[in-house]
Amino acid sequence: MAIYKNKKDDYYYIDYYVDGRRKREKISKNKKLAENVLAKRKVEIAEGRYLDVKKKPDILFDKLAGDFLELHSRVNKKRSSVIRDEVLVKNLSSFFAGKKLDRITPDMIERYKAGRMKEVAPATVNREIACLKCMFNKAIAWGKADDNPVRKVKLLKENNCRVRYLEKEEIRRLIDNCAEHLKPVVIIAVFTGMRKGEILNLKWRDIDMLRGVICLHDTKNGEKREVYMNDIVRRAVSGVSKHPGSEYVFCGEDGKPYRDVRKSFLSALKKSGIVDFKFHDLRHTFASQLVMSGVDLRTVMELMGHKSFDMVLRYSHLSPDHKKKAVEALGNQMDTYMDT
Image (cartoon, rainbow, N blue to C red; front, side, top):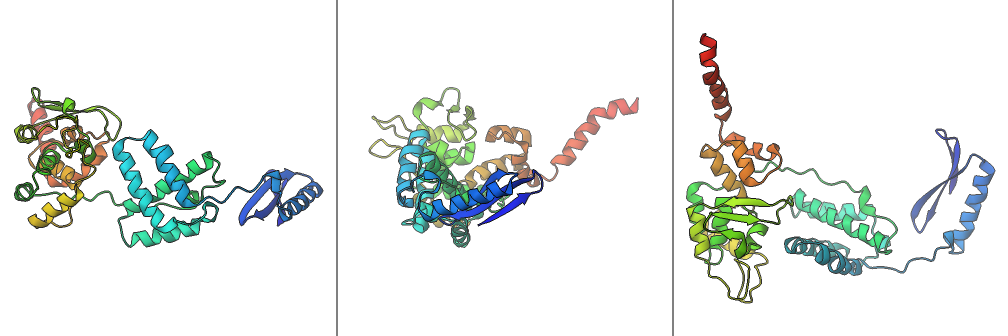
């Protein structure tokens, strides 16, 4: 415990610890008053009546995890986001289960982060840390915690420039090796650039076969987007059998939409001899093949539903002459004027 004077405002501050947590209070320009307040705090802490607030009951991480999913995620988020939160919380629970919230410290979170770095990509670690931070924010709002230890933990640097895509022959091979329920899902991903969650949540009313358009109402950026179908996609969608009691295009026998297709997708990759590939890379495949077919980056950006042009610049190296063509186009346009 200590008293110190802040030279900036000329006030005396007191510094002390309660239950292992550091506390600081701005008191007065009078040093004697600061000493009296500090002495009072010592007595309050010793007698267990610090600030006349009763100590909160011990709350385990397990309890917060359950409440977070039940009272926050499942109430406020869409189905795909709930599924994501369930996975994140499950991973966090493998380390923090059984621990009291007031005993989870920044250094403990750093140890979790260091361990996960050996197992998964930095982006995955960051998503889990962000989820933990949100959980503690909710704990504070619900009166289960006083502080958020995640605030003092830095996120990892991510490499978002990874572009893994399939060549035309690999696309054909992958589709041929897909199970029947998976084949139209992969075809839609490859030829429209739709995200996995957008495809699995697709409803029949969202598809206009006459116009050849799929209308997405619940996209990542929260805005409505129209996706255009080519003949390959049309045939794939037409070949899907409608479930009489479900509005979803891709669903099980119970009529509920697929939660995921990870197992069958990994099986198809293995049969195809394709390694180091994720479902989201089908979206990269769509964009990459567009660029290599001569489609300009601005159009690719619009088809992908990106708001920032920076997101599609990662594909520019696949068309090394696009800058040259742009300069030549300007030259051809101005050539007549320059000769006059």
